[in-house]
Image 1 (tube, rainbow, N blue to C red):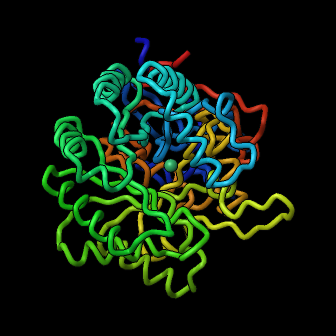
Image 2: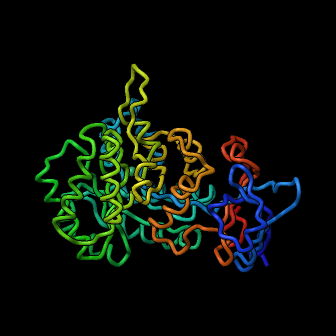
Image 3: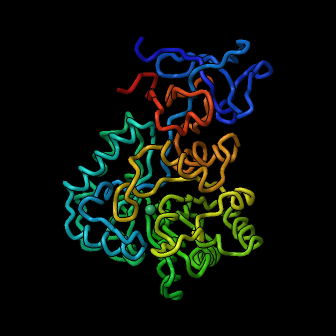
Length: 410
Ligand SMILES: [Zn+2]
């Protein structure tokens, strides 16, 4: 059978659930040796492998989940570079790009992104799509067709990223209604400086609209170096007042890093109480925020992952932009994202909470059927690397094989 096979591999201990774990051979980097078989696209056997003084030559991961991307603008850097590499430049060049975009261009970028993502080992992606008042709905019809076209290989989730006031217009309400059929997500930007009163009003309306159609919300919030936490504090205030339960994701949440330690923990507790999830986006934050052309500074905010996790917030790490005015590098490769993020954020790959933010939290964020834990009965959806230690995973000569439902993807 083509979708059956077997492998001897190392798997991070926290990413596999195994019976008879007493005999498990776990090395000092928390990689355990297992023997695994799969049939009809699902894992049929997973057992400890104990061969004295011999380690498997593979490291196996579940296929990855991207918590935050922008497939509608990826690869626009060539035409729309932001050579000053700052936030304001990115925003204004993004708007220039927007004037020239059409459905065909968006679909080409999206397909290029998805094909790369599948090849590199992703099984699901949440992508924000720029959405404006004067834009027709054609792009959405085609994007939902694309979602269906790729569904056997990759699960695609869309967020309509628009100015907050869009959600109180006729077109905004129409799109929200359409999203209730297609399970789209309402998006927006809450970045200071903003008019507090007006933003409070717009956020309330957006939350009520989401509640009306049972939709989720994912906000680009506090992606800033000023007014630490101003956006999230206002959001919490609005939620308290409305007393409604809408699933919410805070993407970026960078500036709260500048708050005092106990303030971060308190804020984290409030987010956890309301089951608000966070997506940390270190690559774009480190690239754009507090960019100085003449001095090298390390004062760059990113969501404080460890403090938020300590407060029991479910934090995912995402890649964000790929080769567009916001970020000139990347190619939908989860291993590139991991290689950059771990040293940046001082995250140990042999720790459970680190791998949770890369594999398990994103699966929960996207409400995927499979939580990403390798166990008997799970889908045979793997990325298998020619590697024996973490240093090999972050090496430039890395070779990988991607299995989708038990079949090698070529
Ligand atoms: Zn983004």
